[in-house]
Length: 187
View 1 (tube, rainbow, N blue to C red):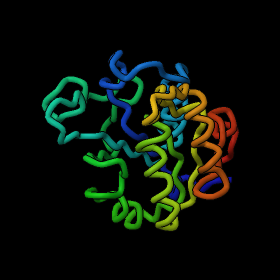
View 2 (view 1 turned 180 degrees about the vertical axis):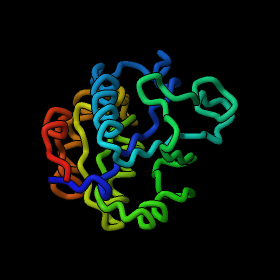
View 3 (view 1 turned 45 degrees about the vertical axis):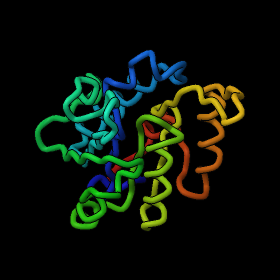
C-alpha cells in the first residue's frame, strides 16, 4: 500500500523530439499509452505529478528550448497544479529544485516513467535512490533506442532496456509493470 500524499508520479523527458527518426529504432511502443493510464490514475486519486523536461544546451539538438521537439508528448502534457522542472543534464536532480520540492512536500516515494531507460531515467533513478527516495520504476512505461558501441556493435533497444532494468532493480528501485502499479492500493 502506498501513501497518496507521499507518492509522486515522476515523468521524465516525454517530449516530441524523441519521435524523430534520427533516434533510431525504439522499444516499448506502448510506453506512452501506459504512461497515460498511470497519469489518469494519479489525477483521479489527486496524487502528486511531476514533469521533467530536457532543455538541451547543444547547438543542433532538437531538445533545445527554442525548438518544437521540446514540447511535451500529447499523452503527458501537464495540467494546472502539476509541477514542472527543466534540466540540461541526465539527472532530474542536478540544476533543478526537484530534491528540495520533494522534501518540502514530504514525498518519499517516486513512481518513475519516461525516456530513455538507459540515460535520463536510469540516472535519475540512481540519484533518487542515493538521495534516500524509495523508487518504483515502471518497466513498460519507459523506452529507449538501439545503441551502437564504440567498436560499432549494435545493441537492440529491447536488450539495452532489459539490461538497464536488471541493473537498477533491487539496488536503486523496484521494477514493476503498469498493471502492477495500477493494482496497488493507495491510502
